[in-house]
Length: 244
Image 1 (cartoon, rainbow, N blue to C red):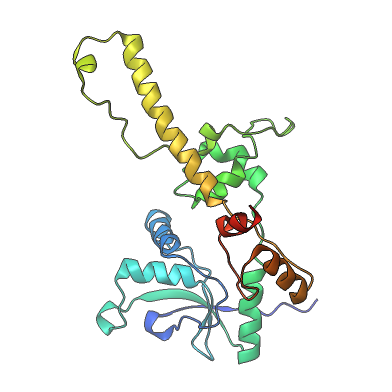
Image 2 (cartoon, rainbow, N blue to C red; image 1 turned 90 degrees about the horizontal axis):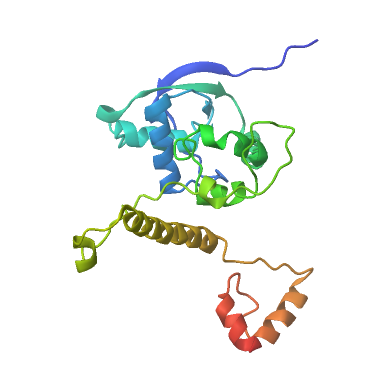
């Protein structure tokens, strides 16, 4: 059997690498900072793909951006650093094709499986944000894989609130409270923080997407609800106001 063509592992300078202007992936500042934290905890595990012919990255933009933060890279020789890359030689067409393949071909995570071992990991260290937490809340963490999947309690999914539970000093609290009364006050304060966390997660999904078979149908709908047919976004409250 003919061996597969393989990339070459090489250590090059950061200054040799250009962030690809055609990269379809969009990495938020929060995600880049999260990647930096992961690199500081675990280290750089490799896997960055670099096209020697163009100098452009094919894959690994978020890791490069995170390492730039770590090394305080600003493009000058003083801040340049070594990095291990997988070197390929691709023409411009192949470069765009491979970059798109890597971006669109990313495997969807098995969230049911993640939910099973969720209690064993640190959600922040694993890069699990509010959107993933909401999806994970539809599964239950179980030790026995034969157990039927149920709904996971939101308390098991939401991250521990960062806010401190503060009991305001009043005449009532300055007086001697019974242990039961103190426990009830702390419980009420924690419940308030919990409700805020739940509301924040719910608000993340406060949107709906409509699609139409053609522009004419979209325009007809927009005319009915009184919005611009060329708009890509519209506040739901505006649509509701016209319906009412």
